[in-house]
Amino acid sequence: MALFVGTVRNHDGGADVDQLGYSAHPSAEDEMRRIAEKVVSEYPVRALAAVHRVGISASGTWRSSSACRVRTGVRPSRRAGS
Image 1 (spheres, rainbow, N blue to C red):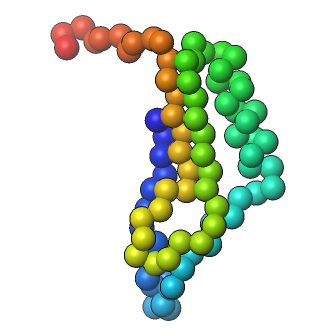
Image 2 (image 1 turned 180 degrees about the vertical axis):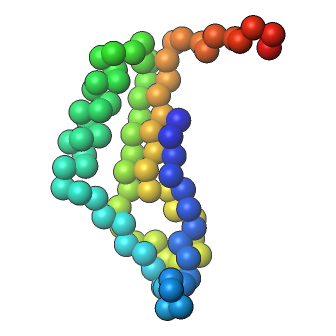
């Protein structure tokens, strides 16, 4: 799982911040789809979810702007001695 999270600060360089706007490149959705399809075609994936959020977040709020989770039917191998 890959995840970007953070809290919107109420300041930046000495200036007050009330909110933060998140936007996405016009090709972001197509590129995320291309990557997801590549992963599914190359690995034994049972489920895949990818999210890229956009919009306004108020200062002091927790924000997750992007996340990806892949579920496979393969269990990680155990290292010797563990």
